[in-house]
Length: 319
Length: 291
Image 1 (cartoon, one colour):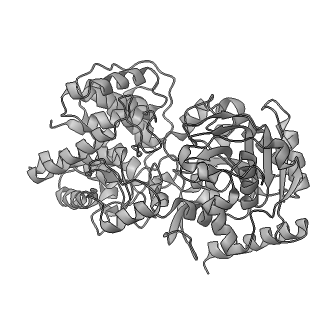
Image 2 (spheres, one colour):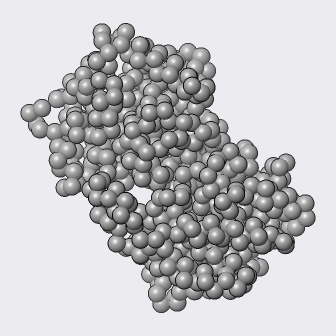
Image 3 (cartoon, chains in turn cyan, brown):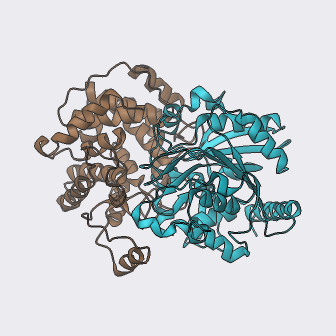
């Protein structure tokens, strides 16, 4: 087993054990749903409470925040909101992180810093340029995939992502016209370097989008997820959709459970999301197993519009 | 914004000791090195920096004739088009270029084979109706606007210099592919399928690059695209966008004098693109030197 594999095996076991010890069993990872009506809420405090409640190991760690940065826009709900990212950075710093970096590798556009500037990241996040790494252009290392779902046998991945102690996925809650929903697991596509795979990262599409989402989850299973669902995107996401306001933050240590919870909030049946199905099949995890903290799903459920082709993903309202 | 002289100094200073350039401050990668060599050539900054860049590109060509994105990556990709274009500036690099061109021709998308058709059907996707002839970023995957455009530039340059008329049909096919991927607004984005994205908008950078690769199409066929590019020029969003727009519009005879802008060169690649765009306005469009 290579160095990277051993490392991920270790952290994977650690994460799994930690999740089990705190939820009473391996099949009930905890997921928080917290109301936040707008980005002017005290999000730093919200995040700090969540992180404490989930007993996330932060002190002395190198934390990497991975927002979803896609397009030149500060108006449309395409990117993770800059105030959401700023609050997350401050929350992790205040809880003793040794280092908080922000990194992203957008899938279509190459000028990542200009994109971040247009999205409001420079003006909203103190020291953004100093703390930011463009994962598309980072140094890379070859990582073999031991038991891939996809047809890939290896991936070149950025040093910055491989070297962090804790990866924090900060996705925008959006519909996705291929996978149904793009949430914390799909957000990991941004870790794959465009400098090697191109813009878009088309080898991931050819190897199976859902399969690659699952592969990336197993490569980076030591994660914490904070989903920006204060404002979200419905319809023809992840770029051409329209704004919807669920007004919540969804968080947890187990990305599949976080994503399954998000799906239910969106009115999407998580059983029908293929990448969640891959994880369920391999690990025995169930999409119904999350132990909810905070708000109940029913109270925050916001029926997202889906494109007609994806109407079959609709969650039965009685569910 | 810095002038050409300052940008040249910045570029030479950013060269790594191995002769290549990184995107930012890291190890050398093929794309920024190839663009830097082209930029130095455009401004006739020859000598040690130029020679060492050429040597770096010669050293990093792979046995299959292509170039990897960086020496640490074990596969040739689309950056081969830029490496070949850059090495054509170097005396005595003909064989490197010839092998690079062979690799590029081998990547051009032909009609889908039965296995690829099956893969589309199994995913519930419609078979693509657009012309073939485009080039991928990564071997064995779909064609996209940027690698197709840089492939056209490289093939056209080699065809002219080496009198390789057999490449013309590939260039024409690739240009037809680009036209087929034009957005409704007249510009180009990355070139995704219109399936579920029929209203997707174009980008400044790919619009400029596509116009550059469609250098010999009559303006009457590009009217809507030229208008879109001129509109983008007012808000290009990035040095990359501004530079490709200027390069593309210049090659269609448009007057695109440099405007004051707050845009920053953020990488060595940006510095090179800026220098190439400035050269296109005042000296020569390096991508079309022999047209």
